[in-house]
Length: 399
Image (cartoon, rainbow, N blue to C red; front, side, top):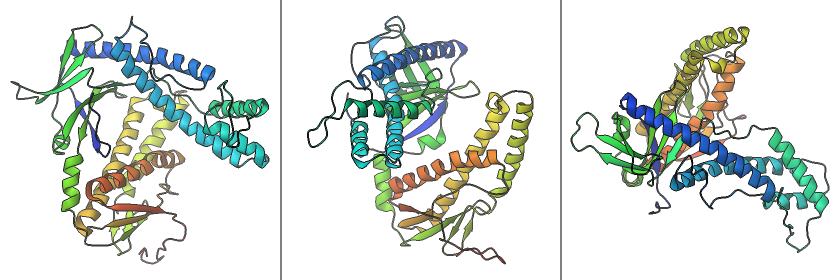
């Protein structure tokens, strides 16, 4: 399989399908089998992790009664990738916990070495740089610390996982005769020789990117039960042309973040002044619905309407952040953006809304800044917001 260039830039866009009920039932059957095999694979990987201290990234195919050998390889890559990411975060938690502890320096050094080599559950000896072996009691302490850290966080579950299918199981092709659906997917099934032809509804935003589709897709099931297909595009050449054509006019623009005014620039521009009113409206709706569900003894996330309102909130934040930052780049053409660290909290909003804003807002800003850097070469720096700006109590001007 041909490897992608190291500096390649990809974008994932979601496409709705136009399958008839028979095809959709076959895809859903494949998704159920995929999830069943992923759950079994995760159990095996956890058992191996606690026995050897590592996950298995290659080996013989299992679950032949469910999926084919190449499908099991894709499922294993997907499961191990998520488990590895979860373990890396717990590894950082281990480092912070030991660094803040009152243990003596020598013991902390030994614990950091065990953590560095991820040898919490390994039975092999761990050596320091000077050649000394980490004592068994230190290994036992590291094991207890890691078990405690892992117990504080929910492990990844795979009962609702989507399918990530590469070139071995899917082929993206242009329509030969159909005029309504220009893109089709040819999905391999669990039966050799059988395929599912999936027509995709055109996504105008994705087709404007002028990139080449990779033969790798994601099949996910949304909270309302609909199936969507995520297609990855290689936009490296398109972004390279846009970076060459982009000529900065302003050396640097500093942005001050707020909720009543989304961004205020060091030039006195107030952008996104209507950001707070829709947030307050959504806040009243989400808070009232959550309180009603809790009085009924139900979790808020069990309601389709609640999930729909939260999804609408996330879409509104993403749309506003992208719109404002795009406007700054198109109008002022800066070479460098300096932003204060976004807080995404407001005294006038509920605790639930502030928590939703915190979880969604920072990721949206970070993703947009990365997109601007890859697309136009605009560098971005995030600084601490403390004492970085002052607002006039009379007119609200920020400087």
